[in-house]
Every structure is written in structure tokens, then in C-alpha cells.
Image (tube, rainbow, N blue to C red; front, side, top):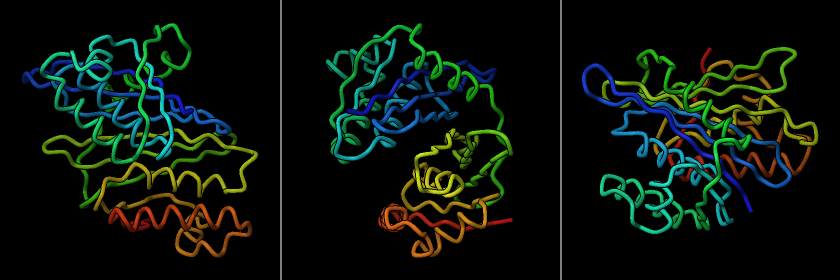
Length: 247
């Protein structure tokens, strides 16, 4: 079973609108913890937290069980028992529809914020809400891949236009010494998983290795890496996602 710890952060803006952030830590057996965060327009904190659950369902492996943990009782009541506030019914329905479409067996439960992974999700949500994102200069979404020497993770930041505000989603991809996939290619595959159907990703700072493997998976030395790259490309093609590399 896969596990996700989710949390959200929200503030009312001077114009009366709401700005939120969501964060999640995804745990998959045999993999290092994966951290994701995003900023969004939101009516309240509960709606932002439901967005975190939705992203967990989208990012978890299809066809497998997913246990989602939160300290938000309204979210638990809405998703698990259908008894939450009326305002949350539509986003909760979207979560269940996404889970059904991806055949993800969704379970929702409570954990206190003192749990390590929930604290991490809380920090990710706060950081996302406080972040600033300049307006996108291109159609589709901009992706920035940052890998610094001496660090054991890459940061993948995706920015897309969302009305008058730009939405930002960030993934922290830790190096896995047991994986045959080059870290730069792993970061690129993570960026592709963040895309919405029909979206064009304009990717900056992808390494030459990552670009070469994405464009021609047969260049990978290991058959397992070739297979994973081909699966990612097939899923992207099926969703209408295009990857364009920029300087």
C-alpha cells in the first residue's frame, strides 16, 4: 500500500480572495519519500487541503491502494463519510472521480500534526502559500529543474497560468542510489507527471542526458530504464502532453 501525508495553508487576501498552499509527502514501498507542494486560489483551508488529497491521488501509482493521512476532520468527514460542509462536496467529488478513473483504492484517516511526515507536509504547504510566481511568458507550463552539486535532491518547479494568478507546483526528487535511472532523467519524469492533460511543458535546465533519454529511450543502457522511459512517454502522449526543451 502507498501512503500520503497531506496538509494545507490559507490566507485571505486584501481583495477578499483566498490564497492557499498545499503540501504532501508520498511514500511508496521501495522508494524514497517524495515531496510535492503547490500554490492555488482557494475559498478556504479545507478546500486547499482537498486539493492536496487530489494531487496525492494523481501522483500515486494507478491501480494500487492509497492511504491518505490528515489532521483535518472536515476533510475526513467529507471524503470518508460524505458528511462534510456543502462547500467541499464538489472538490470531494473530484477526488473520488479521479481515484475511480485511476483505479486507486482510497482510504482517508487521521494522524496528529506531530507525526514527522505531516509536519513536513505542513511546512511544504506554508512555503508554497508564501511563494511568489511571476506571470508565465509562454503558453502551457514552464518547468525549471534545479540540481546543485553536493546536494542529494533535485527541485522541479512547474508554473502555469491560472486566470489572473500563476499556479506553482514543486516536487523535491531525492537521489536514489539503487536506481539505474540517471537522477536528471528521474527529475524530468517527475516534471511530466505534474502536467495536466493537453499541456505543453517548456523545460529549462534539463541535462543533456535527460533530454537525450527522453527523445530516444533506446539510448538507455538498462532495459528497465528503457521500459520506464517508454511508459512515461506513452502516458504523456496519451494525455496530449508535449515536452519542449528550452535554454
